[in-house]
Length: 511
Ligand code: PHE
Image (tube, rainbow, N blue to C red):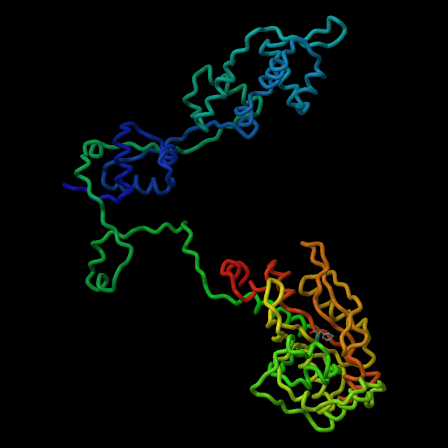
């Protein structure tokens, strides 16, 4: 008759047959490098087939503790001290000299010293007035204690019950020195029984196991004829790589939350913008270098933008030509409406905040008004590790009575603090539409550097007057780079990574 067993059980049975003797379960599991539980499940299978069995024994096991294991490796303190004397060919020394030479802790040193004396390796004498140590032997073979200690080099644990009389003495002395421990354990001793001993290898066949039951097996009842594979519930499951939110989206959402928590409302404006809102309304003269082709993507289709209300266009025209009502003298040139009508991809989201000023005028809004936008802008730049032609600005304005530069610094530093940058500095800057103007830099501790983040300032009267915003109502404004911030936050050195999406980075950073 053929007996069917699982693959692993067959392997274990073969080993038991080779060994012929009883063996202890955890020793066997160690030897086979399998889990104790896996081994015992195989033994139970053998037991069911009446091939093998196990009995339980209460035993005491002894093993070295941490200090004991250290001495097993380096030698007992007395042996280590002796080694120093032999190495340096010292036959005679003082306690202090030896202590210094050994670099031992005092306690360990004196234990070593007293055992050297006990072993009769050295003698101590005060004959010449000084307290001296002498080596008194030529040869220092390992003593019984050391030989016993060495036994733990091959086996971590020894069976207390199997120690010889002499070994028991050594155990006691290690025990007194607190280098060894004794613990009670239930051992399982595995052995083959008659049927198992007689069974020939060719009388064993591998048991077919299945891991899935089909509806067919269930309805026919056939599933009972199969042997089900057991699950190892301790094994880690396969790694799930689920879709996650892109790190940039997470960052944008965080920024959004910060501004909203500070009482701001989000606004959005068109990507295709008129030169009017992108430049003219910002008091940038029509021959301003930033308007030139190399910076701005002008569009052919649509080619012409609609301008806002005639009287507002007139107000902007007048600020350029003579300062209009703003109290400024303007730029003193003939403003051309056709240039203002040109279409372009907005070069900054300041165009969007100006649209908010226009709405302020139309709606007769009452300050304070606080808005922000996180949106895409475009500049004709060569793309490299620190530049993109299409990037994102974190823009915002506060329209308020008597608001000051301090308020501006307050909002900006609060924002950076909340996003994780404690230290920021502001430095004087220049923008045609703000006065005073500030550049903002944050401190990046990994590089020990201040990094430029964007610009800010208080809109000039030439910018705000056409929209009916007059002293003492002022507009604080800022435009900060999102990708710069993202590089710092995510520790990326190449700005392109943020959108090329290295998969490893995405998996690390997304959640
Ligand atoms: N628009 C500026 C830029 O793109 C930033 C800025 C916004 C400066 C608002 C001052 C006020 O760099």
